[in-house]
Amino acid sequence: MLNKQTTITGFKRKWFLGRQTYTTDVTNNNPYVKTIDVKTVQVVVPKRFYDTRLFNVGVGLIGGMLLAK
Image (cartoon, rainbow, N blue to C red; front, side, top):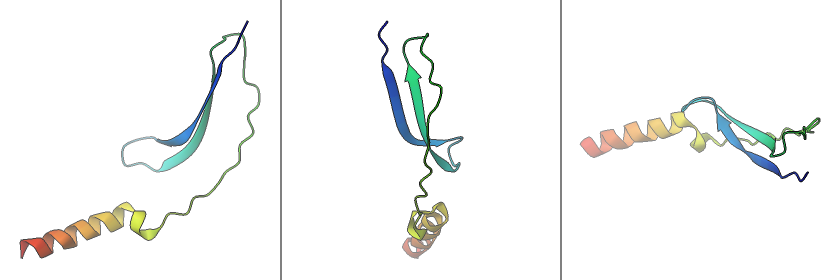
């Protein structure tokens, strides 16, 4: 039987405002083929201060107060 393996790599979140995790999903379309071992390497992506949600909320509040005056 032929097998088609699909590998999807990307970011997942448990809920809307949750922390992102970088994951890889491996799926086979043949039910008799099983993936036994997948090697993973964890790569830490540094988050800059202006990419944080707290920074965006702060800029929005200060911008709103300046526009309201």
